[in-house]
Image (cartoon, rainbow, N blue to C red; front, side, top):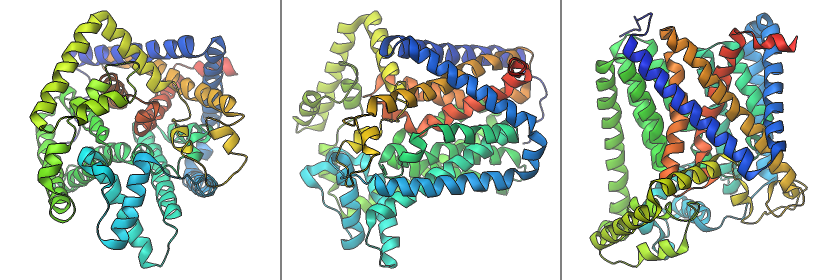
Length: 500
């Protein structure tokens, strides 16, 4: 099952060029509207400055490529060790007073670890069973630290989140190394280094940051799966992919998007046997784990019949996404919760969706989708302030920057967004660069489409769903992967000549 093709066939080239054009044009379209509609001309300048700094950084990485290839293990280890220490330190000073969903998960996990069960305040988990995965993961962490008589659960979760984030960065390096080169892997570490939210997210151990590891882990395991021809090892990697998918999707379901992107890649490769094997093994592992988990939940903690009657259907979030700018809407939440019969609830929500779609019309729906996409990708702070706004335990100078009420928050957000949009711009330009590779039939460039499709997938999903900027957080690593691999191509056409 090893890769044997050297050149893309004409149908493959056509589909790849179409997908690459669609995704790249869409990203540039959203990038333009973010800069033009939400900010001003200065944001264009900031993003282009980020791109220029990135070209300079990549130029120096290329200049010292021989040294870097010899010492990259030490460099990566030093970088990741420093990032881990800094994330833990900042996590300590940026301790949050959890509220709302964050509070339910955090306090519920403590109770589950200490008493063997968890509270269900206001029937929260009947309405929102999607947060049971995060509750379960944190409860395991708290049980483990409890064995060592550690009672500072908040720092235990913060350190765990920091470890997961640093592991995610390591996997991004490994992915870029496999797709392109060592210097491209080191360049993505540069991206994390200049992205300030990378330092501040450890204390936000909620679903968005908590799942940044899982899509890249799933993709890395897929690349390892491709490297072996031994069926036993292939099955092992697929089992690990199934476990990764289950844990990630239990915490935040959007992890599923990377599985769809990989399935599309396998179809483009015409590797249907590989696709079938992957679907069977990964789906089987996922379904077995899911069945065992919910059997445990409904046998020991929640009443299944009550849960089935009260849980909100997925269409509830689609309905909320069809008003305003797609934000959470209290009236819609009250509407969905007002029905005792689940079938009646589903029918009523579906009717409201149909009515709203009809009211918008095609042009209105496109405008709404544009507003929602712009909203999702326009906050370079990863919207961590949504949690810092709950209340900070410690009063530090950082609070003046990272909380929305802080004196310097606007400058901090503008700086972070300028950097973030710079990498979105590089992602789009790099995507266009791939068109040349696909046009000439370069089969080795085919994998570059998958990270692009993953980012495009989260954008499409959120144009149909309830929308917040933080909802893209677990796919931000793929934005950076696309920017880094795009830089690899741009360096080949000697853009760096302008920097000499």
